[in-house]
Amino acid sequence: MTDLTTPPDHDLPRPVRDRQRDELVAIVDHEFGAPRRRTAVPLLAAAATVAVIAGLAFGVPALKGSRTTPTGTAPAAGGQKVASGNTSAPQPARTRKLSAAETAAFRNQCIEFTKDYQNSFASFEVINAFEYVKTARPGLTKSWLVARKGMDYWICSRSGDGSIAGDSAFGPNISPAGKDVPYLFAPVDGRGEGTGMYIPSITRVTVQHHGDDPVEAVLKDGFWFAPMEQDSFPLPKNGGRPITPDNHLIGVMPGWTIRGYAGDGKLVYDSAKNGPRVEKCYSNPARTEVLVVNSVKHPTPATCERMFDWK
Figure (cartoon, rainbow, N blue to C red):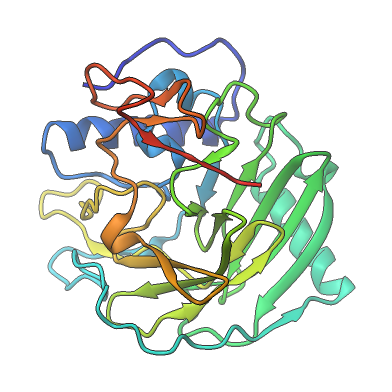
């Protein structure tokens, strides 16, 4: 079972603590075979021990009532299968840069969304703000605002309907205690709803929802951005939170496939085939230290999966 070591003592924003609690519940559910209760985007924490979770980069999706369907209705497209066979040509990534006025309004939305956090989004400088010209449906992430302060990044995303979809943060000052934060679980790592990171050898990233055509992601400074959303699922007949399928992967939303391609066009990563499994342990790229234990009883750097350097 996961090592429930007491985390280091430091103040975390309430949304981060709430997400960590839900992800710990998800780990326990997975280990005991119970249906997974997912209320946050699967991130690094989905595979981390409590000690590691306490300091890692956070990503919080906005809570939308439309993401949950009433009892008795059919779930949205996506189901429990992850598409891997449909590899038709991806839809081109047509984007536009947001104007100064649009960027300022977007930034104010992000500041309001993160107002209860320990860190201040307002203290970060906006370095990029753009949106996809067209997305398949309004619920998909469509626009992103990328902010930076020193080596720390804070990304805020917005859906096609104009509401904040979520945010994710990464950096040594935001997550000083998370030893796994500088590394990726896969060549293309998901770190929020419609965003993530990739290793230097990756030159193309596509995302694909079950039943849809693949879509080309935008790659900027080690981050990728693509229209994505969490699937909606029916509420249990006895009430409570919706029970969603568990794909047993870290950083990959159920119902989605993420692929990464090298400079020669070769497919080098397909989350449906070699995505990072939640039940495995993970070591740093040099394999000198185990960073993520999960349910592995006797992990060693040599026997655990090796993580990837971001830059």
